[in-house]
Length: 300
Image (cartoon, rainbow, N blue to C red):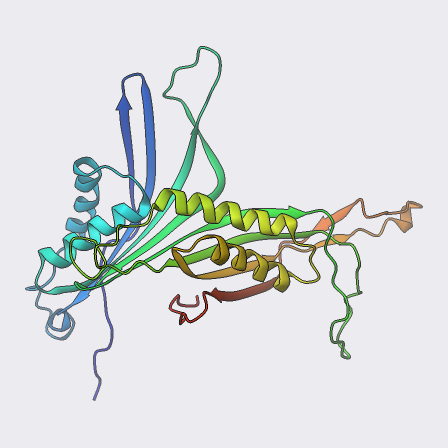
């Protein structure tokens, strides 16, 4: 006899751009918002009854309306507002999960330029996931697509070899990766006013900027004997410097750079010319936790 298991529904990837016009100076927030709702939804699956179903089109409209009514201070704050609205506004909805991607823009600054011209930064995409079940909150922030490279100070040798191993040991190599990071805040509000025993929300903007800076600094400052070592140092730097963050999960693809054989052309390649391979690639993943904290960020 089949049984219905965990289920959810919602509106995925609602693109919303909010412009704040401060006189001649404009400010922009560009988000991609996905809403997932769950609760008393058995009957819509079993009998087709929509009695407890808030249309996904309504979820889309709510995103647009909230962008106007409440503004967008940060992806986390916007996700908290939406999650609280869906759970407290509908008896049948017990849990809301809001995923947000933010695309960065920076102002084009030239002499005499208008203050309403922007260029996409394109360095990375900021992410946030907010989950609310009517009693407690979980906020996971992060970033994806932050490409970094060290042109030296990286080695890889002393590894296990078998009959299929052809990779040579190397004492000086390029180390490059696309950083995909998610970090979970210890803030877990237990009431619908957004407080945890009176504790205020973290400063989401400073938290993001600080964690990003820690990741970059640790990558740049670590003399790496393996990408695993670099990953751990990056995560540990965030945990050590950001007391509001309890857990960080990193996924780092190894963007391999191989020396090109120039000997057929009578040339010596002294760590100067590389072939950048896009696939296959090594994928290194791990979670770094604050002492005494249990992991809660799901693996992909």
